[in-house]
Image: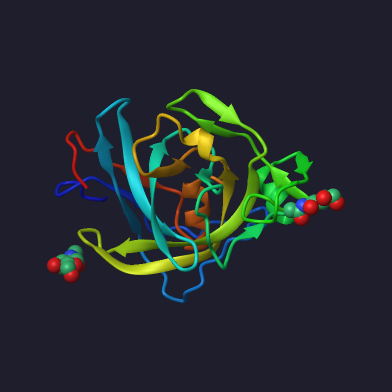
Length: 219
Ligand SMILES: *[C@@H]1O[C@H](CO)[C@@H](O)[C@H](O)[C@H]1NC(C)=O
Ligand SMILES: *[C@@H]1O[C@H](CO)[C@@H](O)[C@H](O)[C@H]1NC(C)=O
């Protein structure tokens, strides 16, 4: 099992069993290199409400995005209103496979100029800020690239990509009470668009992950 001795890590561990799906997930890993497990760093934020943070490289070109972890959160949501620039963002259109996977029942139109988070005939989900205790609507389901470090179980190694991870494009006001520089919340809950599920599918992992929360503040 994963060792958590040297710092706090989150693993999605490796394939022992081929993971059979009874539905179609649009997410597929781009690379032919299949990692045995992947790892994300976790730090503890202690001023204000205690939060555990991670950083994930997203978009094209890649930028590191700081996120608050929510163990029960249903998906990844990020603020797309402020400075979201990416060549690989794709909105999930109503009636698409992505929409049924996300279980969105509502379709919306957007009356501002088109940008990530604002396209017509797209589906939406409520995003929940668990620190604030508040949910916002008109959050577009979309897809974008993400890069993660694989690991040899003691050190992070090669960076690997998923070109079209499903997430939700939310609003800047929903970042309230999150740590400085945080752009959203990554949900580790048991839904088909939760991070563990999507990552497990992309790399054919068994659906298993470990979280080691740090006691002190470091990354
Ligand atoms: C969406 O459709 C409406 C009505 O046709 C239009 O006014 C608006 O500009 C469109 N929005 C986008 C983001 O294309
Ligand atoms: C993992 O990689 C690090 C750095 O390259 C190396 O020092 C370490 O021995 C490796 N561990 C294993 C278990 O292969």
